Every structure is written in C-alpha cells, then in structure tokens.
Image (cartoon, rainbow, N blue to C red; front, side):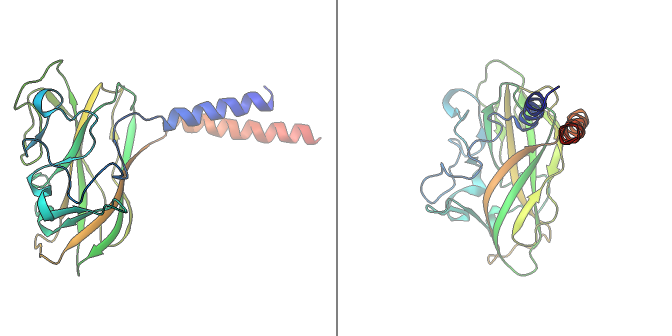
Length: 244
C-alpha cells in the first residue's frame, strides 16, 4: 500500500463518519425571516403532508413560540427565548419547536446534538435543552397525525426513536452537547421536537436565553476509530521506511 492509497482510505473513512442529510435543516437559523419564530399552520403540530406540510421547511414552533415570547434577530438570526418560551417541567413539551424532514436513511448510527448559547439574561438561571425524535411509519398522513408541539402525545403514524436526549445544565454562554441517540440503519422521514426547560421551576419575566445554532454530530463507530488508528500507524511506518 503506497502513501496515496492510504490517504484515500483515511479520507473515505472520515467522510463516512461525517455524512449527513436533512436531519436538521437550517442549523444556524439563517433562513428565518422577520422577527418572530415561524408557527405551525395549526399552532399545534408539525405534519408531513397535506394542508400542514412542513417537510423541508425547517423550523416551526408551537403555541409557546409565538409572538414576543420567542424573537429572531433579523441580522444575526439568533433566536431569543423569553420567560414564557421555557417549560418548567421536563418532558411536557408545552413550549416546543421542531422540524419534519426527509432524511432518506442518510443519518445512521449514534449522533449527538449541540446547541450554541450566545447570551443569558438572568441571575441564578439554570436550564437544559431536550430533544425527542420520531420516525414516520406510514406512507400517507391525515389530520391529527402530526408531531404535537404542545402535548405529550404524537400522531399514530409516528414512532419514537430511542429516548429523550438532553444537554447538561445550561448556566452561561457556550456550546452544550446532548447525550447520544442511535438512529440505527436510518429512516426515510424523521421529525423531532425540542424545548428548553427551566430547572428551577421559578421562571421570571426577566429571564431569557439567546441561541445561534443547533447542529448534529456523528459519533464515530469503534470500527472506524480502529481503522483511523491503523491508518495512522501505517502512515508512520511508511514515513519511517521512506526516510531510511
């Protein structure tokens, strides 16, 4: 194996680790226009097809995201969540937002999610971000079969993927990463809902948090890590052979 062949193998391995499709559209909120977070058409659920089609449209928010409770900076496209944009209880999805996207089984294996927090305006503020993913198990959809953004249930054509994942406790600006979720061999249509939970359960009107990005990162499989390790060792051996 020569040096060029080895480099090609390593490059392919890296591409395999990083390959993504439309699991999350518009991670940096750049497509948002105006100053309000876009609501779903029925102010409740994200649907795949029909009158409430949202497939590929990017971010949509439930009732708690509307009006002045969640605002978008038209220049930086950062999103500020005001007090009423938080939930006081984990897992109740009272103020959720999310997407439904065609992934065509491109996202596989374990993934983690990162949220970039730009600003927190509060004293003693503690929160976390929750994300819950679902796959669409049907071929058609009718009303009331969407992913609910203000309730604990979802439509009958959706099945949960794993369990709810969340970041560590958010107390200051920075990047926060969720625990991993396994997407297995992938799904054709994936939807998710996300929310921010105020852990002190004492939300005040002075509290707000600004975020600028929610993205996804593949967790390298052990076999890939092994391949990269072997590649690095082989590179060292080749260089040693060449220099002799």
